[in-house]
Picture 1 (cartoon, rainbow, N blue to C red):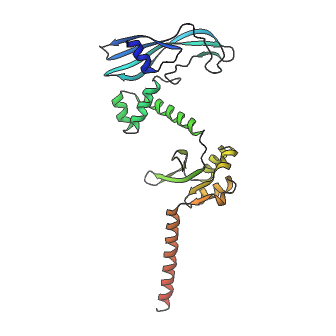
Picture 2: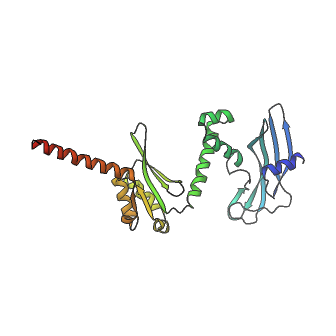
Length: 265
């Protein structure tokens, strides 16, 4: 298999694109892969999909996964089209997100490494600046938020997590069935949890079958005021039930002991 065909297979190039050339630059330790639109491909607006006339081209470069010890750079003259509805817009490159200087596969590699090491370590090993790291993380969060919007949880959990030596709290809402985090809010106030409930559609609210939580009054009241039939859907976690029960029994024991001592028994 020739180099152009090899990289076309590796990149999963869209049917309307092709690898035009591959150039090895040994002095800089790079492989440049030149990609171009195939001749005769119908130009369309990336926003509405309407057929549009060509306007011009802009050269763009993206870092891709390394080829052996060589840093791999994708290079393409990306067309811009003249759309009747949206004006001059750039055609989307299928291997990268708009505004990114990295391929989707490279960004996925960075996110996987961030699960195992610190931001500083990943930045140093992959030779990425802080702005590049921040952009990759922000796009990952945006993708996650988009996927989360399609979730339809039936059993949710509401909990608070302390940080900064337990001086600050955040409220965390998660899907009890999948473990996915659905919402994170500063502090543990009733208003923040109610605002999240208010952002959901009536169908999603009605689909909830249970809400697990501790006995924090703000969470209880926010749920009671936001979810129909919440009285039968709220489930207190066993840890806090056992804790409060133990404290109540201990309080009664101490009071009984004090009363008996006063009677001289």
